Amino acid sequence: MHSVLRRLLGSPREAAYALLAPVPGFVSGIALLALLAVSLVASVTQVGLILLVGVLVVARATGALHRAMLRGLLGEDVAAPPRRPRAPGFFPGLRAALTDGDGWRAAAFAVVFAPLGIILLAVSVGVRLYGLAALTYPLWWRHIEEDGQRGIGIAGDVRMDNWPAALLTALAGLAVLALSAWSTHGLLTLVVRPLARALLGPGRLDERVHVLEETRAFAVQDSAAVLRRIERDLHDGTQSRLIAIAMALAGARDHLNRTPGDTPQLARGRELVGSALDNSRAAITELRDLVRGIHPPALNDGLDVALETLAARAGLPVTARVDLSTRPSQAIESIAYFCAAELVANAARHAGATRAAIEAYDRDGVLRLVVRDDGRGGARKGAGSGTGLNGLAERVSTVDGRLLIDSPDGGPTTVTAELPLG
Image (cartoon, rainbow, N blue to C red; front, side, top):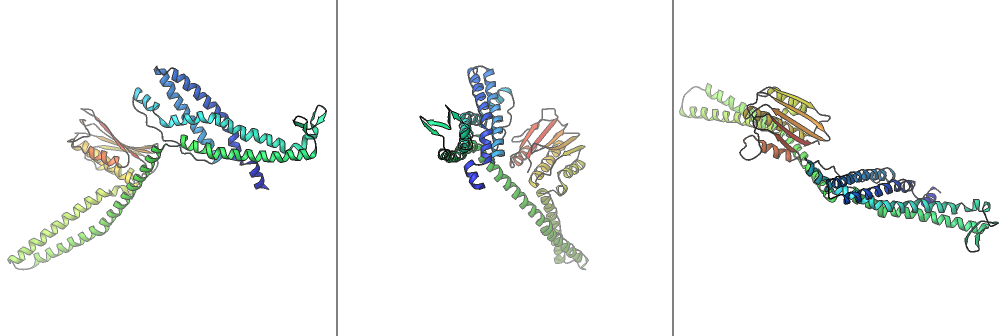
């Protein structure tokens, strides 16, 4: 019985959407058209251009409302387009706003949905009410009189004034209800949903960029995990073997030194064993430096502890302040730490700074590492800079981050690394 009623009356969620969405859709569509017309008339002036920006802002807000109704009533989860970064300056910002493709697509949806919503409302609500009236006709036809006759006249002298006619009307009402439900479902499935996905969701370029960002993030995280395994293998395996070899060579050297005699062969043996021992110790030192370069041990307890340790061991007074709501991934932590270490070293070696400060915090899914110093300034990215900033910029760009440098001649210097949390 429930399935029969559902087929006749349609989905309650679809009916609710057809009842609630058209009115705000029609109002917003007409308002956008009016605002767009005024903007185009005044577009020869800056006021008109600013009004056009207002059109796009309203269109984006309208698109968010439609996505919320689609998600809440139909279960259609249309992803929101990404927010565009604000361009610095009035005219660059105005140009960026006017070329917002996502805003124009949202405006197109609002304009198209204005008449489409009225059609949807008429098909779903108007036709359904007519079908319900016809379905219940046997209950009330005897209480209606026209010109002294019961029932309703439908054409000329034809009147629905008896029980067979009333039952026939009820059957027609069932058919109308089914037609309304099927038409509503068809409009939503074939028109509204595809239109919303095309105009209210991310564009193809945005989707492609999102896929590439996810792929790159996976590759970076996978590389970080592989390097971490290599670091552990080098530390636990190769380094231990080198230490064992060095100990064996030290024992051999001591044995040769205790051996009586001073033959040329014995002296040569002592020399070779001593050289091998020195080389093994140098290899252990290089291996330890390599392991620290792959994954600094200070990061084992988190970026906050690592930066505080870095500040305490720096060659100049350094303060560190870390405010992170969540721990970043291994790759992001490593990049942030190496950036801080390089920038603090630059401040001490190249800038002649007497003090520096490290600050790390996260906002809106972005980790910002800020290093300031009171040195002579003049730090630049470019060939021959000698500060390692090019390498830092390349390292940061591998995770779609960026390096911002503010270093006027005479100082002070502020370098900000922006890294996506992940």
